[in-house]
Image (cartoon, rainbow, N blue to C red; front, side, top):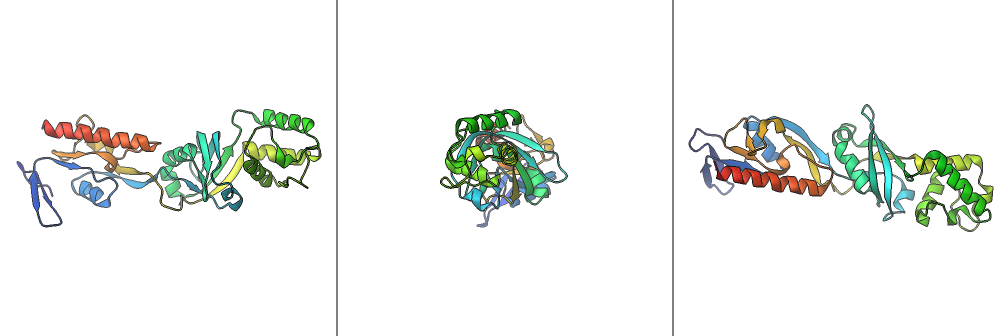
Amino acid sequence: EKIPAPSRFRVELRGGTTLMGDRLLLATGSNPKGYAIAQQLGHELQSPVPSLFTFQIPDTQLHDRAGISVNWVQAQLHCPGHPVLKQEGPILITHWGLSGPVILKLSAWGARMLHDSRYQASLRVNWVPQHSVDTTRSMLMAFKQDHLKRAIATGNPFQFPRRLWEYFLHKSEMSSDTQGGDRWANLSKKELNRLVHTLTQCEFEIHGKGTFKDEFVTCGGVSLKSVNFKTMESRTCPGLYFAGEILDIDGVTGGFNFQSAWTTGWIAGQSMGQF
């Protein structure tokens, strides 16, 4: 509660104790009570939504490859009515869909539009970003010429793990049987085109966030225009300071958000001590 100077604030604790002071720091994270206090003291809020989370993809064949990672892919996020977001980085297959740095970055930049879309969106992954569509096709054709009698499921020119390669074959409507499956010699032009499409423009349907509420941070909070970042003091309510996730700050890695919390907390503490 804000009261007249010199003791600007009165805080009543749950046990009945009352604290009086001329400076108050709000570092309540994403707790709704902290947002409510900030609003009561005249601050605008950017509506909080989850950020830094994994994508839930209903594909049992993909889930069976949980634990497989690829060091570098390109990924595009498509939400109806919103611009396409693009990111690059490592990707990880999980028991419920996709994770890894490239997915977390997309979830951070797309936090609001994914929330608006109720986490229903589409994802396009290029598994071979170092190659063009033409060079991908050429590499497959060259591999075919050198391995005519070999089962397609037992080898590939990109050195993907066998289980992941078998998934790409399934996605391309080809047999992944290592014994009686298709041979490279029998690879048709239509099958080749489908495989190239899978490798360069693999499409997934996103049907929600990770199933365990695994989001790391919250996008949104107290509007930054109402805070003096040299001191972390409110521009609206003198003597009131902010630090951490209550502010509308979120980054593309958990480490960035830890650093933001520590830095804003240090600045606020220094400023309050020099009041």
